[in-house]
Amino acid sequence: MDNNTFTVLPMSQRFGNLEPGESYDGSITIVNPADATENFSYKVSLLPYGVVGRDYTADLTTDSDHTAIAKWITVEEPTGEVKPNESKEIKFTIKVPEDAPAGGQYAAIAVSSNNEASSTQGVAVQNVFELASLVYAQVAGETRHVGEILENNIPGFVTSTPVTVGALITNGGNVHEDATFVITVSDFFTGRVILPTEENDGEYNEIIMPDSERYVEREISNLPALGVIKVNQTIYYNGDVSKEEKDIIICPIWFLALAILTLAAIIATVIMIIKKHKKNKARLGV
Image 1 (cartoon, rainbow, N blue to C red):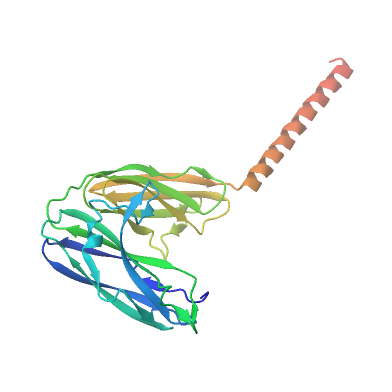
Image 2 (cartoon, one colour; image 1 turned 60 degrees about the vertical axis):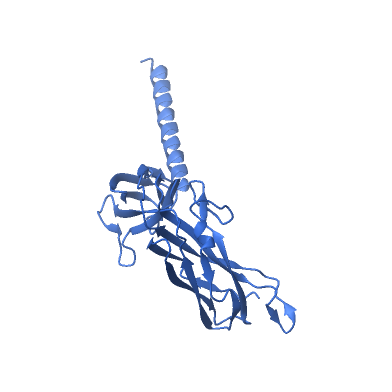
């Protein structure tokens, strides 16, 4: 089973303005790669999706007012097999109840190996893998958009790369919100643009869940090991804009140690010269 890993697509999907009493269709795709050694027997489970802590650790066990959608979803073919180098579309339906509350609803459509069904020449598969496609939905009705950018953090001094910038964002509303980050980086001395590049425009989005605080971090790579860079991070969120710009000194530990040793050697040399000068003056009776 070592080569029999699989993929679930998409990693997440959104459903907006779900009307109570209506039904909505969606699907996920299970991919069994070309290097798989056997058919992949799967089973699909519906789990509540929430987050815990500022680092947004996934919580797939706790039910809340925002995870009722896990009970509204029915899967057309919850078990089955996918042959190597093939994929299979699994359709599902969201039936929104008449009394569904307005606001955000979240679930995980989890796919795992079906141990009871999986076998290779009569030998049961022991390895269990699980992947999920996250569902972000919004039920139509009155929504509250309450949130702000609490911190926009850029360090001033680091000893190694990549450099990490961060932001603390809160959402006190009843629906998820998008926070957009735009990061630009240039060399302090030459003005050479490091970010954006042709491959990376320096812009990305993060979802902020209702009734939560999230600390978002982003690594900036392809930086010099020693030097000074100018970093700007602009955050757009809930109608608010936060801009922070700072010059970051990148100075590795070895260079610090070398600088300290060099400075110590210079100080010692100066002290020796002063002492020698005083001795000469004393010998000459000056």
